[in-house]
Image (cartoon, rainbow, N blue to C red; front, top):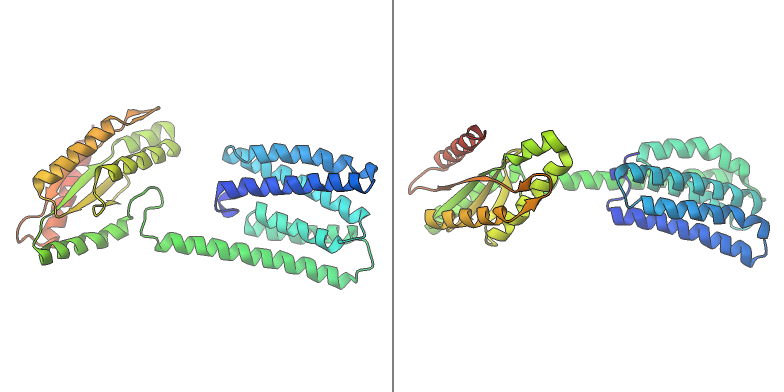
Length: 314
């Protein structure tokens, strides 16, 4: 189960589990209200299991997978019971399994499981409904759900491909920085003002990934970007140029002001600690555009400083 392909936000995922739990609990209360005491036990027991699944959905990815399995199994049991013993609104209950499966599983697995379970639900269906009506209703819901999920995934992929921001942190992507530097260069030449760039190397990222895994690496990167944002101005631009390399474009900034920004950033990093690695560290050098310097020469100097920082890493 690919939970990144289910709901776009963990809060919505937990809300969905809570909604299924509430629906099951309301079913038990409804049976009590109608006097069907022999049918209260199943939804009441399933409500306890679904409450547990809701709490598990707040945990790790493994816990969320287990929560999805519990919710799916409990809901299938409830649907089977309702289809067997209810003559009212049975088509409504027939639509519940494909919707639930579509929400909890990836698009392909949900569609396959819905098609495999179709004979089971249709055999459990009671009432005077024409078989073709139930078949077409079930298939329509399954296909519409699959198309909706496919469109959601397509939109997320499109947003990711067209977003100017780096997918891992609050910084511009490498491609966007390749466009932003020429823009700032042309603006500096047109307005006759200075332009400086802070070249930043984060050696802790490689060490954190090797010793503690991708989670800590991502945490360090995001924490650094947060501190970098606090240390710069609104019109400054932070972007990534490599796995552990970033540039901070400082328009209208000479070398002295760039060094002040560098010192301010290093001071803030020195006051920021991460439990596994201690204080955040970064290697930062300032590079200021020379008078009458071409864009190619300036960009080449930036890359030279990047290589120097990486070569100096112990």
